Length: 298
Image (cartoon, rainbow, N blue to C red; front, side, top):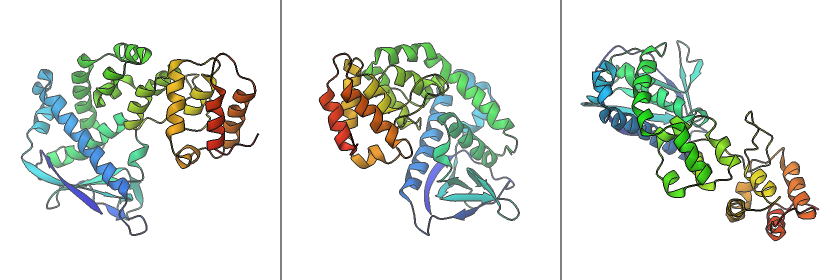
């Protein structure tokens, strides 16, 4: 089990739950470090956002959040359970009555959350330690509403989408959790549709997924896959698709192929189709390199 000591605003209150922790084959996992790092990043960003937002100062929950005078232990384990028989698996749990108060994060479930969900979980787990039992997410919902209103003036979805359309790397590289929250779940669809690699990689760094394998259409009618972008963009080619293709060719074969089953044959089929029936000015040599990298059969 790994742990970080985080400075949080804490009041000693009655414990709302205790957690049973299950390690992965008895070993510590590198994923736990990532989980704890993300938990810290979200907590720190919530704090800085509220601290810089005048409207938050009038809210009791936000004010309490900012008065951090004690410490809590934040730990990660592969799985976290609560309940009288420890039979309910959860993303996170907390023990406010422990010395020091503790928060437990599931390494297996945390990565499956969206950035917005992670922010809400951080609030949900910290608030009981601050004295607000948040069983029904009432208090964390109130705090998130205050937090989100503080974010909105910084950027609108329209302004962020415009930067994706422009594929403005300098602007995109400066984005943080607030921009991710404003973009919402359709941000990756926009980035994929515009073949904007800087936006795709930024969104990926915040947990938004873009498959390496040839993908089906998502609800927005966009094929969210590097292969889709690279192969189809060669009908005809353009500067952005060249960047995506070069990125694909720079990846390790294992990284490219690891998530392609069971769509691997479809991926190779589309690559071969692009080689045999080129349209526009796309360089089929790069498609051939991609085919060879994945050991596609003709």
